[in-house]
Amino acid sequence: MPSPFPGMNPYLENPELWPEAHSRSIIAIADAIAPQLRPKYRVAVEKRVYQMIDENSILVGIPDVVVGRSLTNTEKEPSNIAVVAPLTKPITVNLPILEEVREGYLEVREVGTGEVVTVIEILSPKNKRTGEGRKAYESKRQQVLGSLTHLIEIDLLRGGEPMPILGNQIKSDYRILVSRTEFRPKAELYPFELQEQIPAFLLPLRRGDTEPLVDLQALIHSIYERAGFDLAIDYTCEAVPPLGEVYSAWVSELLKEQGLH
Image 1 (tube, rainbow, N blue to C red):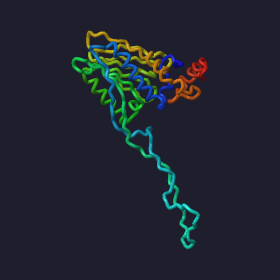
Image 2: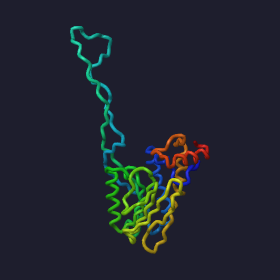
Image 3: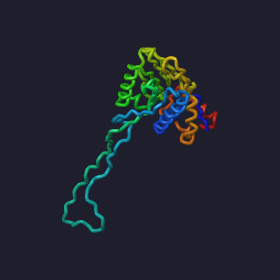
Image 4: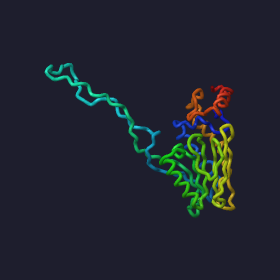
């Protein structure tokens, strides 16, 4: 079953589905552009690894029990033992645990030199929230922007804080940033809304090389069908994160038209 949305499907942003959608998107982009880049370039799938404590991560709970002696038979305690007042019942709390985070991204490398020509990033929720995830990504982002490597930054998440752009007054649900080394500090920004299709963009390479067109919309729709996300999504429930008043009515009507709501 195809995705009911013309552009990005907001239900894929659910934390239970996004890790899979993110991983599949990375591989889909790599598979789509690799044949067009041969033999001068190859596409490598890389991972950024860091550790963090995230309040939205899995937490370790303390059981609501009291440790003490228990009787395993019907034998009664001697009556000459004084009765002790019951212990105060503990409160169940959560302990944060150190989490190892692995975030995938792509590097387009020149075969002859091994140099990284272009980095392609798809943002994760941790990149858009205050904390180690954002710090790790912003550090990597600055390294790329300070180098001779092109950067493509794809943000398909409504939630969180967008990546910084100087003097940015642009408000949009989603955005794609294409930063070419020869144009910095200027960059190409493709802002788009939930009702709109995901824009296609050219993949920057070495000067003079033919740049392939990345049709991200077609890839996202293909991923949705091949992964069977229609079987995992209950469209009668509210999207996570919530759509808000701006889109709730539009989404409800769209899903009703397709018999999903």
